[in-house]
Length: 333
Ligand code: NAD
Ligand code: GDD
Image (tube, rainbow, N blue to C red):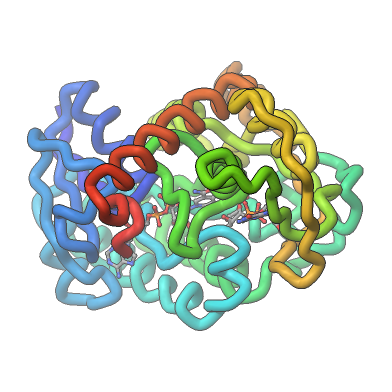
């Protein structure tokens, strides 16, 4: 049993990670900037605290006494958020920097950083018919403006703290992660949850139409949360000192994603395309050669199956919020 700190534990991935670590029998500390009642998941067996990890003293207080630190805290969201909040995204550099300093000073054994597929060079993502991205494709650097630059810089900070200060650092490049307990409205939601919400709204209001950002031909690979957590634990326990893709390699267009959700909901909607909405790169997929060779494993949940779980959860949340006449807990950022 280890003493493990999860930063950003009030968020989507952090909440699932706390549960997985508790299930493995670890003693888990959970920290987030949000008040605990606004966390996506609350696990009573964890020690949950509210701290602003952009502050150096808060990071020192948070990390003290823990053997390992997982940093999932960041000011982030889907394209709608990161395209319009570049400075806020970049300020997350303070979180990772102060946490690394605290981990070094407290002698924490291992440090995990949640990086992103947004670090990859934009030139490699111009076509919807994209060649899957290998880890080497981050350089020469031309990442997503704001959010991607912060992630790429923080990856390097991890590398140098590992090399120079002996903080054993592990870095995952997550590819668009979705599943139950993720944000589905309020502006930070990503496409899988947004499309579920929009389909449910269309059915509820009887307006059988859906707005899709862009022309729907953009492609992505979406990673189910259970695969994200499994990959995170494998990476943290392993020897790979380089950043590693944790992402599904099942490529789908946004039109295809909408089709899957329509099928789950049992509806067919008129599609209204919005060319002025945030679009991001035209295509992105994960090359999983390295993770397969290291761990004999890659994310394997079929999109249709993961979306079914996600749709059901969002549907139940929206019905509950509607009955109670209030916004759901996941949106109180
Ligand atoms: P999330 O927004 O649900 O969770 C992030 C949490 O960090 C939030 O609860 C937020 O309150 C907290 N936080 C923000 N600023 C903080 C601060 N100053 N101090 C303490 N806590 C703070 O996001 P998520 O989807 O769970 O993502 C977790 C991590 O994984 C993030 O670093 C994100 O950039 C990265 N990531 C996520 C995805 C994805 O698709 N979800 C993809 C790539 C990378
Ligand atoms: N969010 C959202 N909402 N996207 C939509 C919608 C909608 O209603 N309709 C269509 N899209 C399109 C977007 O225009 C974009 O082209 C695509 O769906 C995917 O959008 P997002 O899911 O918001 O983000 P992303 O895949 O471009 O980037 C996300 O994944 C990265 C990791 O792969 C972001 O969450 C990043 O923060 C993350 O690091």
